Image (cartoon, rainbow, N blue to C red; front, side, top):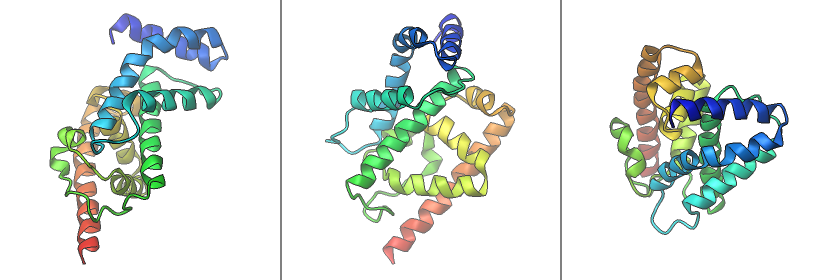
Length: 195
């Protein structure tokens, strides 16, 4: 998204926050492609034959965004971060409703050292990852947000820093520590399920 459209998206989000429904109509075509990209990233980690498709995930997230009422959108980064969180929540709810293994006993081992390619791995147990991320957020909320924004939201380190109001160095450090923490938690869960 170029700077001009980025600025335009922010302006439309603020107008929508103020109750301007026409702004929402103008905003939709500007954000759809990026929302689809986020959804595609989420769906890449799902098993083949998943009944929920990328476009359906975008549409469901979009409907929830529109239905949530007035939100004080700060900027486009905030909007896309919330959108990514919604998509993650939709997939987690879908997985739980289908009765998938909560702790991932049959799921393949997930190496967070390879986190940038994690979404391209098939059959990732998002429920186990979600549980670990919730636990991390209890221990350190900011590190949890870094994972949500960077990993699930697909934001850059710079965008994540901007969204959280911290330095790039802080995001890099939090990302490294969060990966280690999550890897430990997922390994603990996995070894507990093998016992």
